[in-house]
Amino acid sequence: MIKVKRRDFLRGAVAVSAGLVAGRAGSLAQSSKAADSRVEILIGEEIGTINRDIYGHFAEHLGGVVYDGIWVGENSKVPNTGGIRTALVDAMKRIKAPVIRWPGGCFADSYDWRDGTGPRDRRPRRTNFWADAPEWPKNAPDGPWKFETNHFGTNEFLRFCQLSGSEGYLAANVRGLGAQQFYEWIEYCNSPAGSTSGAERRGSGETPSRDPFRVRFWGVGNESWGCGGNFTPEEYAAEYRRFTAAVPRYGVDLKFIASGANVDDTNWTRGFFSKTVEKNRGLFNGIYGWGLHHYAWNVSLGKTNDWFAGKGDALTFDAAQYYELLREADRMESLINQHWTIMGEYDRQRRVRLVVDEWGAWYKPGSEVHPSHLLGQQSTMRDAVLAGLTLDTFNRHADKVAMANCAQLINCLHSLFLAHEDKFVMTPTFHVFEMFMPHMGGTAVRAVFSAPEVQYTRADKPAEFWGLAGSASVSGKQLTLTVTNPHLSEPREAEIAIRGARAGSAQAQVLTAADVHAHNTFENPRGVEPRSEQVAVNPGALSFRFPPASVSRLQIALV
Image (tube, rainbow, N blue to C red; front, top):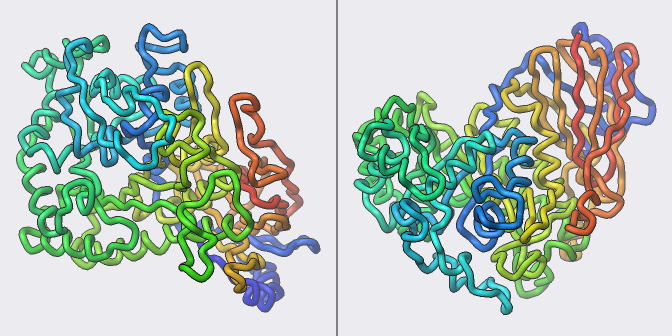
């Protein structure tokens, strides 16, 4: 996608329209007089196949994610399937959730996977990594979120994946456990039913599995530059090689994911890749993905204008805080390009892809639905806009990004769901994931967006942000276009040109609200949800009005 600035848009609008009249068959020869924006979709300029795993999720033993979120127990009055919240499973099926990362996060590098196996009444009770986190609400009660019961272990998690139609992505403990334990965890999950580990798996807890789970995705540590061991990149490269050398495969195409960089730490990427190539360039064949973590929050502007103190509030924010959060999230584009460029200096055959296995918005405490939900936060229409622009970024880089995992699934950071006891609600972010489903497995094609920029004030100084952005993909004869309009008050009237094909019929879904602070609650679970809208399709012309602060999806039948 190319985003065109306001001055370039105004200067080139006439020339662009004239050029389209003389363009290839399928170009738009007509334009809307009211249009202030333009989207050109270039069917012939393919980027790559959009891996469905880009729409992945993340579940850590953190606050209310597992206990009160996913796991309620078999004896709970909350509807469940083998202890797993039924409403969550049903919702995950709706979005065809492809992959779920577990058990962390920072929790992963304090976790002994054997603690979560065997009969539940014999599993040890451990202090959770997050037990003394300073972000806990003062009235937070003790419970499994602080003192881990291990009732939800490997079998329970992979059973949750099976019920949801997802694959598991397991993150190994590199800081606290060794390569042998990693070897044995793979054996436990994937060995045949008749093996020793298969028998152990079959007798584990109340959710046994005779058949192997056949787990493909394995993360070698988490944030190994920090909570996962404080390694140097060179030290971690050696650990990665040790953990992944000569592991049992049992007929499974294992895909190992290395603990990659935090935001723009290019030194970490360069250090790991340079050390790997120094050992043996062929080792890149054994690396499926290189991790990348990026959270968006309102960073402080310094002592002079410190009205962006901390991470900001999930529900109370002004226009500048809204745009600045989106600006921070939009850094994902440059981060992908930066790390991808460095990776290519060493992995010239491009065997390793990016895996953005933690992303989302992060706010200060105070909007969690229950005190036991550490880092829990409400999700407004602002979060839906952030999710839309991020998923579009991944789609536009389908040739680089193999997987992404929104952090986190439920009752935590940028969650798709909130739950407490028998209450359950889908957030606006869930609806974005559902709207984007047609992109899964499609071929991403280039799109050019021309729109007036958003003008706003940041710390008493003028600032600007792009006016429209999105992504396009083709599956058979269906074109899917998703678009984010970040402007808080102005709609964008857009003319949509399709180069290389012609539009037959079209339908649209729009997610927006009268107030960008709008969110769904247990009392009002449908306060924010998509609505269907008409798309103006005339001979050779297509136009649509993108509402303020909205995420839209157009599905266009090509003829």
